[in-house]
Amino acid sequence: MSKLLSLIVAAMFAAVTVPAVAASHVGAQDKMEKKSDKKSDKKAAKKSDKKAAKKSDKKADKMEKSDKK
Image (tube, rainbow, N blue to C red):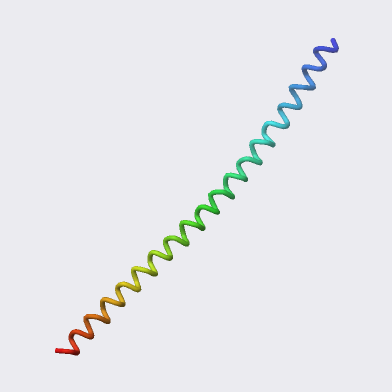
């Protein structure tokens, strides 16, 4: 009888802790995704800034060439 009671207590403990642990890991995964999203956003912003700078440089060069003519 005591073995049965021990088994029931262990099963109830497992039934309560497993979802709690799984929920805590899901939150951790979301945090990691947010961090990686921020990093990729920063990289994308840097790339777009570089592209914009190159375009403005090209436009300035074209204007200078047309002014020389």
